[in-house]
Length: 277
Image (tube, rainbow, N blue to C red; front, side, top):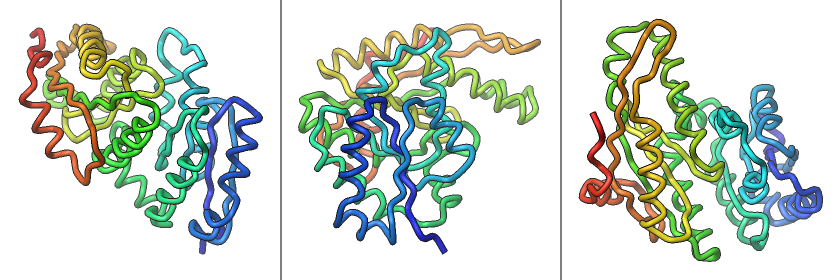
């Protein structure tokens, strides 16, 4: 029987780490979340990914502002490490009031079952390691709540990677998995650490982003991503022609219970949907 709920805090500012730890361990949060809270902090994505390999955490608390200050390497490996952080996540910016963070953490812990393996299967795709649509709904709602305080816009950009069907027909599963992860590593490497890529199944994905100038900024991201991802890719002795069908972007202005309405809106906005073959 689990006697504590484990939280992994990823933040680089020691003073902020102390304030958050004190905030999260005070009542009534500790009473609402379980017998005790065990809060561990690490300053980098790399160390967090290593820690997640060694043990299960009930929740990750991610300081986007601190992570944004870290310059990623050219291959985007820092951002790709987000794929390995397989636990429910609450993201925030260091300058925000901590009361909002505390409430978000309490809510996330209250919803989380104690069976961590079942949670992982529900929230993260086994094949790609990306958040599922179930987790994306929660991340959208967290972003919408932050946007009310920050003044930023929350945008969703669904897309389909064409050419992966050929990959699945030609290669064994282990090689297909490596190809998927290589492509997704390239995609994540051209995004910000605060952007989220989710996998809906098959070749369908979505990018969740917080932008300052609404649709205008989201369209710029969409065009940059499509340019990078529409190409010929060589994997050992295999070459694949990959194209990206983008739908949207669509702005998320209120909390949602499912993504059906947003995805339907995205389909009707085809200004960036025609991909080069």
